[in-house]
Length: 130
Image 1 (spheres, rainbow, N blue to C red):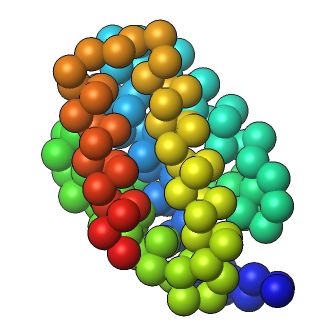
Image 2 (tube, one colour):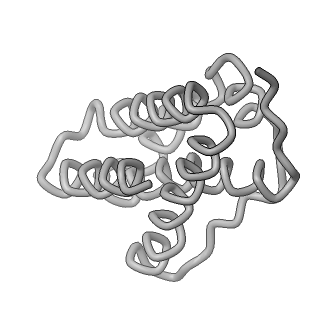
């Protein structure tokens, strides 16, 4: 099955995935290290989702002056991305979910804390809400 995504669909997937990594970085004690590790995990994905996430794009919209504002944007984007993929290609939805969770785990790997655990829980809930 071919996955037919519009540019807006791709922007939603990228914003959701890289936004999840940004949320983990914001919750981590060493944000640069967390963001780098999580971003590498996303850029290393394979298959159709990997092609979407690996593309260097200016359409990743991560804005907000606080973690709360960023979360208000990213968590719904995660749910929207999963809904979109479940409708078009359920197997790709599973790949996207797994890729994001690996990136989230990688971002928090060296810095476990109640804050990173809570953020990972919120991200997982947003992925599963679709």
